[in-house]
Figure (cartoon, one colour):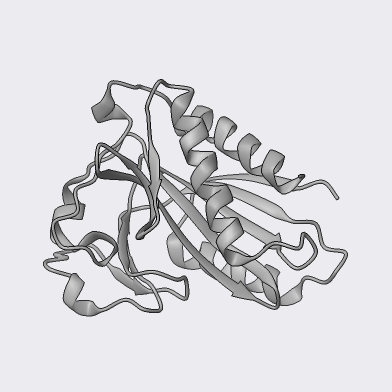
Length: 202
């Protein structure tokens, strides 16, 4: 069954999240999987396991309690967001396998721009020189996934200074722009989504 790809442009976090919940709640065994490509206005999101003590000084940026996994992170303009609405039971995928697919998709995409990135067993996501460039947060409901990944592309990274990113004190972040790569989110999304689709088809 082909995967539907939706390019949503810049969308509010909360309404996009509600749309993902609605699709997941209403889908059945015949519903096509979807990949949503988007970016969000500035927002902090706190995952299901998130502790407010990791919010150090959020100032005027709103904080939303989300139902994804993980701790606290920041989303903002210039960060590529890819949401994966996947029937993992139909594909016989475990949650760890899906996390690995998303990590490897980011690593593959970054390699197209000569950026060497790695995944870490102790902290999901993707890192360049020990700085986090890609994050993953998922929710599984009714054997289907929603939420997905984010890659820091060309954004203001300063809001990360006001949180313990992903629950780790002192964890630094980086982005493609700081690594000498200038690329639009639309272009960056192409190798990421292609890598995800290829992996899901195996």
